[in-house]
Image 1 (cartoon, rainbow, N blue to C red):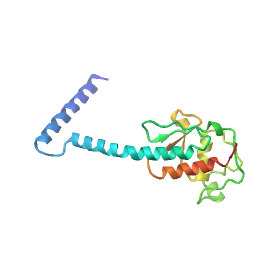
Image 2: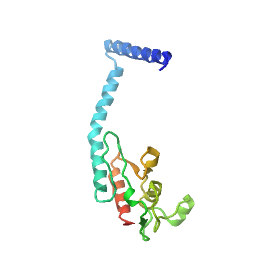
Image 3: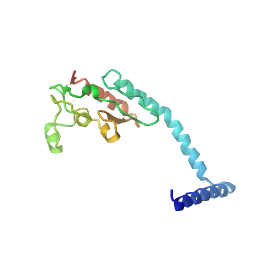
Image 4: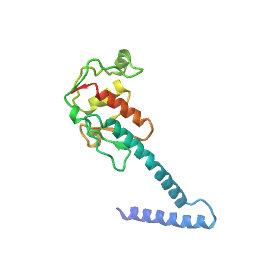
Length: 171
């Protein structure tokens, strides 16, 4: 915190306060109105996000994923620790719309019969075989896990596809 930064912040806060008061006298939309409206919209979205979160977690309940219930975010970080060192079954099918030629063109290959050594392996297999994009947890200080977002109603379908993919891992 430099003196200039504090001065700038204080000046901005003072300006916003004075602008808000001025606009209130003229019955015009005020910065605090916009803030309150945005807060109300967020409050409406919370139950929806919680329902999507719960649907995703329910899809993973019958798997060997360890999925802590997220608190305040819209991401879950299931651990694939129980699947490290395991292999996908040899009869694993590609995701709809993919074939061996398309995989080769993309520089990818099937995970059928291959061993999972890390979350990045599972993330690639999820894309190739389930058609689901997830991010390895290593990028978020969560090794051997993956990040899945539940910010839209398709999250439940994505979790269902991932659970189906997990059923093709030889335990």
